[in-house]
Image (cartoon, rainbow, N blue to C red):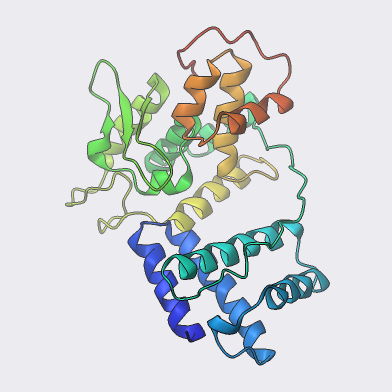
Length: 288
């Protein structure tokens, strides 16, 4: 099978199964880079790719000073690519199955202090849309991709038990997340000023288009700068949500489910980075 055809089929498959656009873009670039490497070494097509060809590509990344994290991501892309080709019968043997990920040391998550997330709120208080996005991220632990895809119908703020409802997507189960007073207040203020256009998405532009992930990221990054918060990223709001609730005794099983973690061990890792967690007795979410 030709490289181009296999690549096109793979990317089409990723889109059909609903992978996030950021993932599709990353996989596209990773596989393009691999194909360029293979073609430069006269590998004829996908059927003739061997383990040594792939391992040589990984070695070339190391010699080009790619970080271990980047190399690990590219290996994951390669494995996913060849697993797809093998499952579809495009290649008889999966040459990537013995590729090993480099050992990557886990960095401590960036957890915002009360002073920092208070400063972030103050910085964007006059921007009702951004404040609503910040409050949802901070109070629910949503991923930025989930925030961008949030629908108006999935947000209940007038109920006596306000909540977000997220549908199942890929390996992440459907889940309901309670909304506290801070999030409800911010969302209600935003809805009052939200453009009066037909759109199912909660966060939209003036023309009614959903806000892109990169625009959410750049907007909140700008407010991090205005608030004087150093070395913080949007995903750190999710880290802060998990760490805060562990610190304050939220039941770890409840927290793991609400956070959409595939494994309880993912939630448990945060215990290494918080001081003196309280006894985990409560099943309710406290308020940031």
